[in-house]
Image 1 (cartoon, helix red, strand yellow):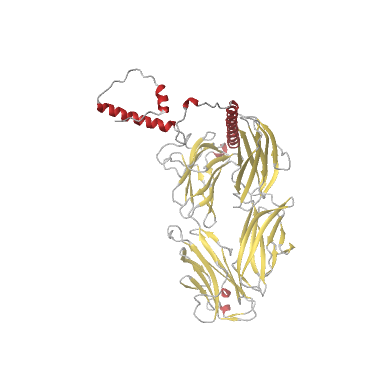
Image 2: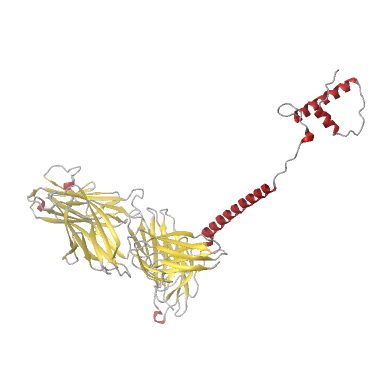
Length: 639
């Protein structure tokens, strides 16, 4: 077996290895294996020490090229700069975020249950929650267009809406209290926007916080009622009734009525005394200041002969304060113009407008008719169509004795002889009434809608199944209000025979007896809103606390000597909601041997979300006889 001579590179490498023990010879097979392994190592080393041209590199001539020192310094400085920049940016981002989101907080508070036109308070609270002082602090308010500024504490730095606070130390707070008035339509949103700018003393950046606060007025300063038909007779006077009245404490004046540009009719306004109110322009009138007594106006609309179809009339009631106009109420009315030979007008409970009604209520109808044409009408029949499942037809009262057919009442010349020949200019009125079913006899699954209108027909032909618009009166839609109920009880012992009152029974002059008052609300047909219960306390009755309500807030109004419980909403779930409180009764000397009034009858009011009707329930008066207590046996006489 012939061995390949070793190459110089391998020889040089072997010279670098010190052999500690001599190599011992072995059997031929072991030598072959060793030579093969040695050849494999030689080949591997050859690959390492050959250059690209296949030549053996002389490793004895290798030189080590040292890196220049200034390159290392430059790289170190660059790396350090990157770290410092990243840290600075991170710090500013973190502290900036903290400064804006956490350091300064803004909170806006207002009085509850606001009434349009009456003064109330905005309170802007600000607090520095952090450990860093703030500077250049400025608060700017963008008032609602319906807001009237009265005063503030502290006073504004400029105009009526900018406060330059300046410096605010860490962990300190402050507030701005603003007095003013809101005049707007009930249900409209009144949004306050507050912009706050500041700078932390350890930063050069200025930050801004924006905060908004919405108010919806709960009560109208001026109550407005409107009654209008849905059709207008062309060429004839048609009447819209407008009533307005000041609520308690309202001081609104400079009242104006405005309408949109109406070129399809002539319009005039009549006051309480039947006198025409001169217009400021063709579309506006100045009105008397509202008072506790209602002001009733009539807007007379006479459509022109060339007018036709559907027309819209927009009404706005405004007040002027410091040369600015504020909205009190507005209505958009749709009218179908008709050209009828016989003018018909229908009213229910003295109103020709849609409204809510209550189960068990009596509906008093008035049908007015007038021939304002040029010719005599012969054999006129007047028909009243009353559609609704809650009508109790057994309660119908009609002195003219009209014929009832299904859900209609028909008057002809048999009942009213003047209908045989109705001459031009002839007019008349038919009055009748019908009662609604009470809750026990009505179907609560029914929608509770009642639709009423009248129409006329000339001649002896069969009644029309569908009269034309020119033959019909206005249509009135009444919607059944929810079955809102309110019950008040005054007791010494509750239903479990546990004493919830204290003090002497019967009542004793000069000594105080505490009694428990329970208020129970129920409602099942429509959701209600703005629920308020009020109890007026006699001067010998005091608020004794121990109040508990499942929702809303109950409080004692010391100025009015009233107990008031307010709820934002009451769902239609037929579940009783019960609130409670205590009263103390200390009879006077002149009440000895008398039965005295404990509560004169509390009142609960609410607004029906479906009908927009105002609901009101009053409880009977409660006396010292404790009529609601099943345990106490007393004649109620004060000892």
